[in-house]
Length: 481
Ligand code: BES
Ligand code: ZN
Ligand code: ZN
Image (cartoon, rainbow, N blue to C red; front, side):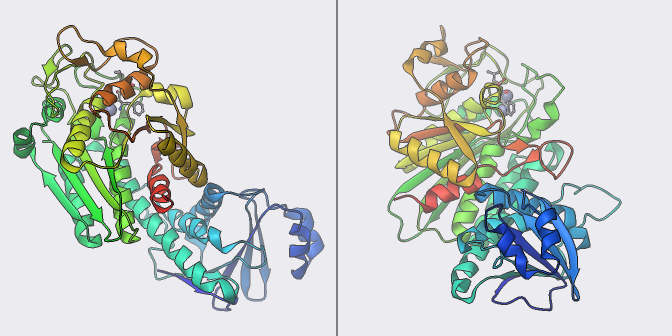
């Protein structure tokens, strides 16, 4: 498989795809094709609209992008087109961007969408090999004007590199709990670090105990799969600021003794979406050699249930030294994040600290599947993260961290309790809990990605990983001033 940038339509491509935006100039743009009048009638360049015809010895597709497409629209359109067509595509496909006047800056998104279209969920099927385009010895030619070729090349590289990391992240998140564990997340990180040249240290259960990660150990007490505490560090020599990322790595969340209902429990294999976002961001930052210094911390465990599992009302310690009354064992994410946050602050003193977690159903009830909840004490950070969300389509919407909610976490017996036991403001109270362990860090953001990490798509009939957070954080890292 290769993606190459070319200046002219070559005849080696048996299939050519032209991209068009829905804009006033569309009619003129279509004039260079035979039967232009029919084309004008049939093809309006609506998002995902396709039109197929034959010209000489080539199969020609027109593909519509809709009106004023943004980064996420380019990705969506190309991804769904390639997902549907991949099994029928020949070995060489050209994607012509010249006639539709597509600016070079979108090539990253375009290539990203093309490669993501190769994704398939059917990993464990025994019959029928999943169709693929890039798995074969194929080539994708991106046809651009000669003057734009160099930029196009860089863009294509970024789009492709991003997609392969996203696909690896999607595989991790979509893996069922019997095919992944805290240990295998650690192994994933070690492999990635070796391959892309960054540091990874994975602490096992005994080391976690020695380090005093008592909240993490508390959550993992009911599971036979031992916990891991994963620390990653990518440092470019030109970096000036230290960025800390913490991701919730619960490889399955049964709820523990406060057991979840069974209806949607299978989706809880995705409860390591925060960890996945951190792993993907650091891998991709290293691949792209971004001039940044990023430290990732991933507390990883299963939230299972057996005789030794935490029970409601139990009091546990934490890395910070604070004690926690566990009112609800299903509010486990905040417990392990508490240890992750105080650990990263104590050991690395990051200038900016961002945590990502599939933390609350309440956040899904509030924002649905289109935006993650953002909680932060820093206006600049709020603005820059919001902007990156708009840019990438991995959107964020800010929710309050007001102290009015603080009293909800007062415990009679311990320093803090993990749940207020009330059916309102769940996402906010969870964020207030985390704030207790952030120790007045001046630039912290908590992103509740419960609604955005797993979603509906053309890949399947049920929800699957969106790799949410990788493009968001990479864009944010790339554009930090
Ligand atoms: N992992 C869940 C949150 C979640 C819900 C993620 C839906 C993705 C989709 C989390 O650990 C959880 O169970 N939260 C509880 C907290 C409650 C018991 C305080 C919730 O939101 O119901
Ligand atoms: Zn839970
Ligand atoms: Zn959870």
